[in-house]
Length: 263
Image (cartoon, rainbow, N blue to C red):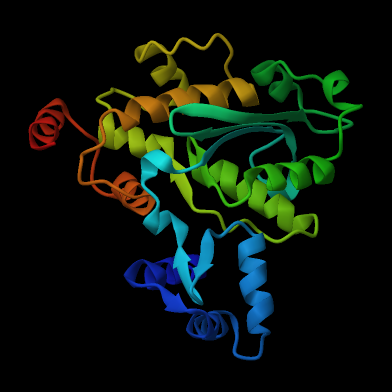
């Protein structure tokens, strides 16, 4: 269990007095740190904590998932590893209560690009040469993201790549709660495969563009919406949803019928 999950576990049990919470941060991150700095840094990194009556609570444990603000993200990169490649395009959609609230889309400056990436995405060096730098784009994206729940299809890749790049560029790593639409689809949608391209076709989403950041983010949003229509009634809060997405095996027709009867 990583440090963020340890904090989530504590706050899911109960709201904590701010001083008690800061002491927990010191115990986790180091007894000789500045507890207020740790607290403010955690918030700045997108960890969804709030204060009320001098108590700290986890917003995602209190917020109904239907009222949660999600940011659905997709990136295109020049390679698979952050240490020797970069983001070349990022697309994101801010979504809440069944509505798209805002969008974020940008190319990222690069002077060269592997040929296979151009063949895969259709993005060329000419598209990127005059684009804003990775640092400029990620700074604006981080502001756009805030403390929303970070959603992606195979969220580990997009989240970790962006987080590692933020760290490399002198920003703190992300601390947002995250949700994977592959995991959620496996729990709510009967399908032979769960790749975004396959779901796009089999679910009748029919996005015409694939392997472009904003288009793939929009497809992932549609998968999220379809998944929401099959969520059991016992899943209430955003933390319930995150836990539900990670638990158990993929849904089958038999399991789906049982879930529908019990909901």
